[in-house]
Image (cartoon, one colour):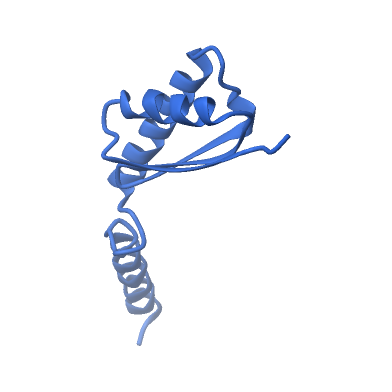
Length: 105
């Protein structure tokens, strides 16, 4: 095989491998879904920052296909509930997994 044919074959293989990266699987989002999830996470973070009584630094937000997971620590059950209510108001949130832990005193 000539150098030209080898180069073309390598470019074709690279192009095919890149197109597979944009496809969603059961455990991996497509590129578009990933961007959407990032936007939702950032909107939830902004809503938490804007809410008095919640500490953004103690709450982690992760989104996968519209399901938002809240994790971290809060001081009271009321703060845990407030974080969930604030999250529920964000457009695009389909479900919430509230894994916030209330710190024992």
